[in-house]
Image (cartoon, rainbow, N blue to C red; front, side, top):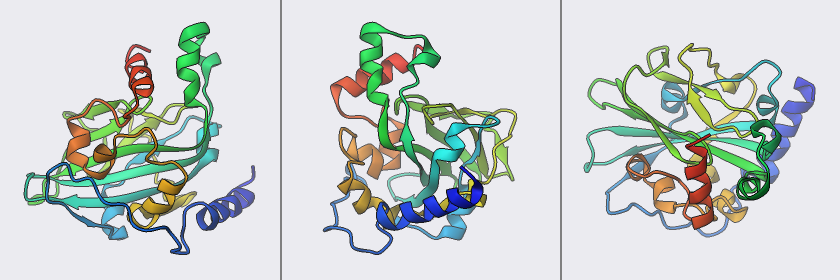
Length: 239
């Protein structure tokens, strides 16, 4: 896909699948998990802490990326601010041939193949100093990974994460080769797209409170709710 046709496709996805026209259904209640949370989406501020993503040369994942969508959470119940981001892709392949897996295990992981794909990361920031204190990211089948020390930062605030083909989850990029994906993909507010994404199954089988509350995601082991997906997430931890 050429860069011109790719940008045209992204534009189409923005209007037909991301709900940019504002015609979303009635607003879904936020699941705060007992916290008081204020949510904002200043795009300039979100750019300051957004992840920079590293793709391998000729990466299929880079071509599948539609955009990166973020929001900020503040809470008097926590001593950090949380910048939450979701990378959205056109689809995800199961990639079983890359793993060399067959039979029962393949059946469990085959659920990884699906239309649309959403991969989360969260940057926790000291609100007094602006320093990045911790990063939470999906490390395989939406299992939760945490970077607490030696966070690979670009520009002092943008965590560098390597995208793993063909599943799109992350691993810390210690070489700091991540790039600003807004140069070739859309950048926008998660708050603007949340309801439309729900209509196409974004919250299906997911742990809603881990999506809606970044601090709940931090203390969880997965963003998934279903038993099957939790087992798959556990399996990913051994791969």
